[in-house]
Length: 130
Image (tube, rainbow, N blue to C red; front, side, top):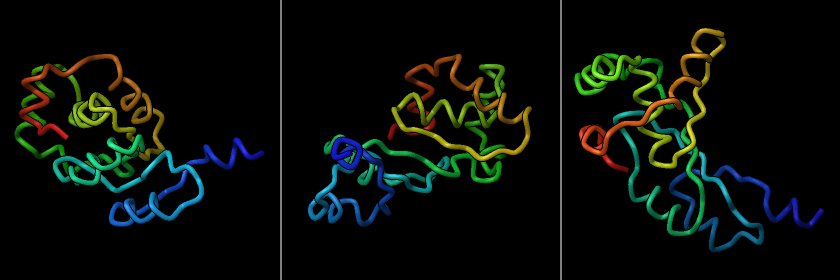
C-alpha cells in the first residue's frame, strides 16, 4: 500500500534527522533517540517538533540512574511515586513517547502508572523543559 509506505515510521539517528527529512522520499513520522533524564538533545527535539516528527525516547530510565538524582527523588516523595514514574511522566507530559524496557510484570505496571498523574509546571521546570 502506498498509504502505508508514506506513513511508516523510520528510526533516524538524531544527527541525521535534517538530512533524512531533506532526502527521503518517504514521510518520516518518528525519530527514535536514546534519551534519559537528565540528558536530552533539545535542538534535535525542537527540530523534530518543527517538522511534525514525533520523538521517541528509548532507554528512558537509563538502567535506574535517575534514582539517585536529588530533584527526581524529591518529586517522587512529593507525588508519592517512584523515580521511574517521575522520569517517564516528565517525558510524556512534554509529548515525547517513552519506551522503557522491562521484563518484570511489576515494573511494567509501575511504568504504566506513570500516566495517571500530572507534574505541575514548576516541577517540569525543575526537571528541565525540553
